[in-house]
Amino acid sequence: MDHRKYRFQNPEVIYSDMEVVTASRADIDHLETLSSHNPRKRVRLCAHDSPADALHEMLIIHERSAYVRPHKHLGKSESMHVISGRVDMVMMDDHGEILQLIEMGDYASGLPFYERVDKPVFHTLIIRSEVLVFHEVTNGPFLPATTVFPDWAPDGSDVGLAESYIQNLEQRIKSLTGTQ
Image: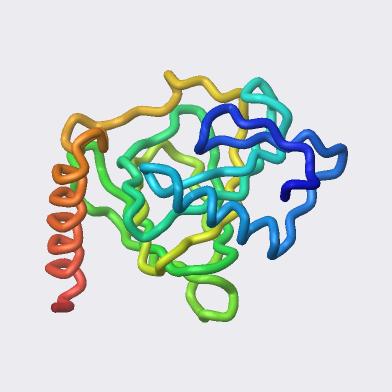
């Protein structure tokens, strides 16, 4: 990636300045290295030019320990295509009750590798592999007020609290699916 034109909004958000954005295995490897150095164990490469763009396409890396705070998007669609790794997408109602669990993996896994959400429903990710690489597409512009976070889930600033929340969520999933 060093030979490519990138600008960093912050350590977790990188924009491409290439006229035609491409990504190779070497680019993903580099993004994984960047993710491993970030405190929240994540990074995203934005193929769109700015937060104001009408279409946002991102390659996103999350390590297993990354906490994805439950959230929902108002007036937006969001799709996810798993490139590598395994993840559970957990859909929840406004009170934090589990509505649906979608176990996802790459195409070769035989699991769903693509999903799209058009309605404002709370969701979170539980990363099941050491590293998850996915392509996300959503409509812009990015307006923080269109993302809603519930008061029943921690914001992630306290790592121990976030870990406890995920452990509790996993126990609830096991109760629902009948697995131990």
